[in-house]
Image (cartoon, rainbow, N blue to C red; front, side):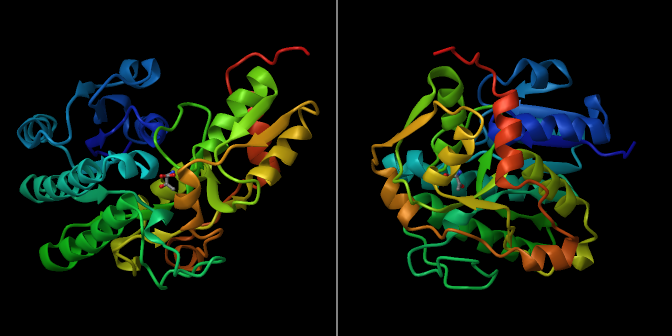
Length: 319
Ligand code: AKB
């Protein structure tokens, strides 16, 4: 087993819940310290060290990094697009403030690698809509997107000027059954499975034809671990890598669910999140990630829907 001490900030969140368990398999359960500002799943809490910490509490974070002699950091804490739009100042302060303090703590504590997620939210209305290349027009119009793009540039700066080995991916909307997302514009693609199994109907907050880049969580975790494992000299991007996965509209997702649950019906009641979704592209080109570190997604829409319906934990009601 590899001798690393890994700390995960935001281990109770959508990505953290699954990433913690995978990292514990790789490095050993006692080597991976899960942290969150609030409670995490029983699986995360009971399978290794768990600490409650606010990522903005730099002193406590520093104490933990020294106590556990941390060698790798996964900083997953962020206010997502929809929530940040409701509280822009806090979104900026949390997303940017925590990145700065974590990067500085990594330098102070001699951490060898930092992972920090970016998002397809860095793209904006002037970005091409389909098959978005790595290098393109990037003019985000959401506070979340602005914070992620600024964060990408700071990651690149810390790499070039201070030698911090920080790595990042522009995650699309992530779909998994182990935890529910909170505050994102792509969350409908998870909510829909719970409602389909519980009530065989779903009222979607985006319009039927809103195409967005998405990814099954297994692929996202795989991409993250693959990037973190890649030799540093193979990485040509130190802002954040585009990765390709799925892309679909709510209507297409509903049709795929209907193949399993014929009585399932979707209706549409777009809210403020429609405007956020409209500013984002529909699909992403991940060729550079494929070239630099071998990225290749495994799940198509059908495979993702089958796994989600099989594993989302609510009983199907009989009509
Ligand atoms: C969101 O919808 O805000 C996130 C994202 C695309 O980063 N899922």
